[in-house]
Length: 204
Image (cartoon, rainbow, N blue to C red; front, side):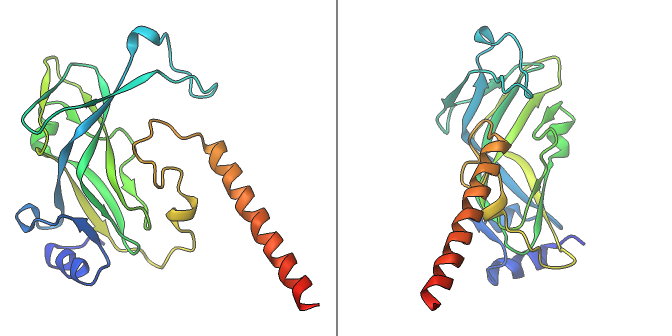
């Protein structure tokens, strides 16, 4: 079940949803429009022969920052990362990222597969921008680039993205190795076990 506009406003007032800075003019009947930021990550194609995710071979990248009055030209067939002006999240609701129909008809994709934001994940979202058209598309900071929707969960999740999420606190990082996260979880578990053992010894 998705939240309607009045439900979104109510959840914002109650602190169940965070959107900085909320602009009611961007509130749609069941979604909220978000804006494109100034930062982009592009791959250095001249130094990358191929990408091999299994063997952890990724392209070298560079960050490009443009001014509010500047533009970024996205050429056909090129995939880059961008970020949102808006910082948002919720501990209660599942958030869905969706494109704008007006931009989709021009061939602009804003996310390839990563379209959901789990409860507990607060972020300036990273867009996976791709131009499927045959001509360049001009991107400008502050343009309405996408929309977010909020859906009610059937129950409160046991897991929290703040502790289990691969990209928590580092959404602008190009790639985070899942094995790094597994290692972190093992360290956390070992720390918990040590605390329990210390507690038992103290009681004795």
